Length: 181
Image (cartoon, rainbow, N blue to C red; front, side):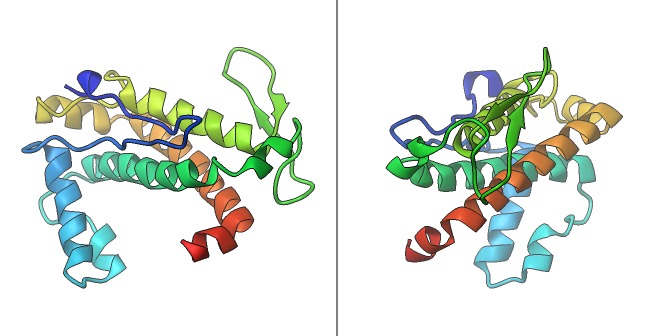
């Protein structure tokens, strides 16, 4: 069950263990399709196109997890940079951008860009690990029922907005470092 295989997130040591899609599940099948398409020299368009006969909602769920894993892995490398400790609340990159975070229970507080990234990644991991929001696909029909709700669509929209923002911060701030890798 997903609850037994919770998503990891980067620790202060930069270690990250991504979620693996369990063998034989809908997510594993859809994830494997993407890997085969890209690994066979296929185009990016083929890799992101909905496979015939599959649920669009299940496809979005798989890509939310995969995108989280990809960005978290990149951040795990970047988070070890001592330069990141120099940012005070409200400071970030690019210069002049203020990052604010609210846990949903109160007013948004000003945080540094690195703290914002950590909070976003933690929030996403919590959403994906919540089986009421991202059910395990032991019961594919039940998973698809949840994945096809307006609440799931809204949640995935929020996840993708936040993770694209994190990706943009990392890309615009660490392009040279990423290129050197």
